[in-house]
Length: 235
Image (cartoon, rainbow, N blue to C red; front, top):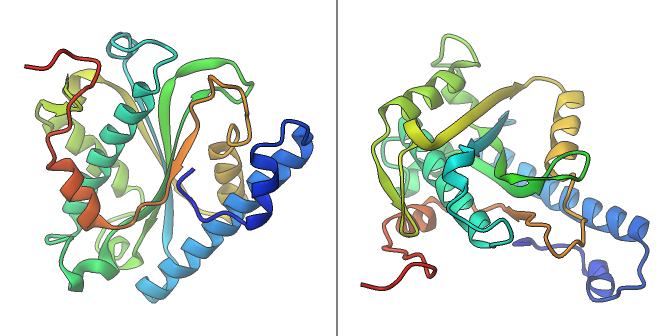
């Protein structure tokens, strides 16, 4: 996990005797504290409470068959594709996202990637993103659900690209991108509970990871890197 979790978690990380209940509570509480901290930071940056959305990305089953079910590479590629899509959404909202003056208008987000259903059974790796949007963007839209239309436009107009050596075309290879506007505290808690549902699963095949990377300079720089698939033969 790429997070600044509470120090009390450390005694449980490598302790197989810690109970599942203790682990679940500590992991969930640690993640929720960090999320609350990031939301407070977003409020400080936006000078207003963010508008929240939940975005779920799934790739086609046929496309996912390129990777072994137990390969950690699946998670890495799903994050790359999600990051690319978030970058394109941000570019629709902010013309020069890496400029200092643009920082108060950039999207902020938490993305979790996982390979488990709510019942705990295996499913293809996919991502859940909690998006935080500056309300000034919403003021320009005809309705708050316009973000879903923006995402669909990006998918339909997408061009082929390479994700760690794998040729990908969102219009062809993406199964779905579901965008939901979060309109109440009850919806927010239900959404975050769902996104963190497998965070505490210590099964070795659990592919849960979470990223709260909000530096667009880093993200756009990474997307310009020529990152190769180590599972493919070198040229």
